[in-house]
Length: 164
Image 1 (tube, one colour):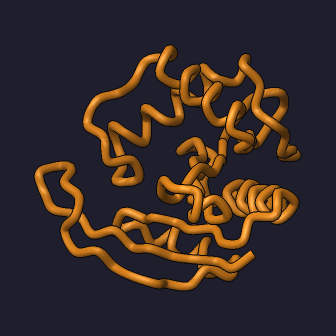
Image 2 (cartoon, one colour):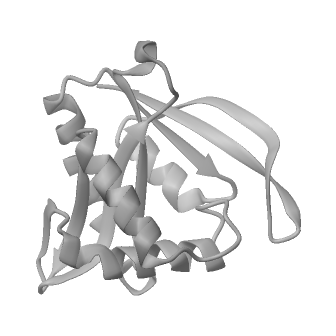
């Protein structure tokens, strides 16, 4: 089935919530311990849109099977042209090019908005995300040792960067 990337709508939030919570509970992608509720995702969505940040979904047959967004890298006006990406694909749809399609659309959005740099903070281990970012021109710019903790172990954070 064909994947279409489109701006997320309020109606996509339950699917986005399910994806987000899956990654909280089962992966090292999100360094939170407890699932969030729909109100939290609604607030996140409204904040992203109000600040001009895109939220994109990968639509397969009318169903959101992945989402991507970017937001601020750090606070302060001097960081305004630098953004940090987030991308999540439903587990049963991984390995089919959906993440690449979403990331390419997200990069285009950033370029169209006049952003200068896109960052990725990748919790390790996550070889698939590292390979995806490398294939799209991101380069490693730093590794932060044991700055996170999840699943009863310390975690490293890989920083990757792409000039836009």
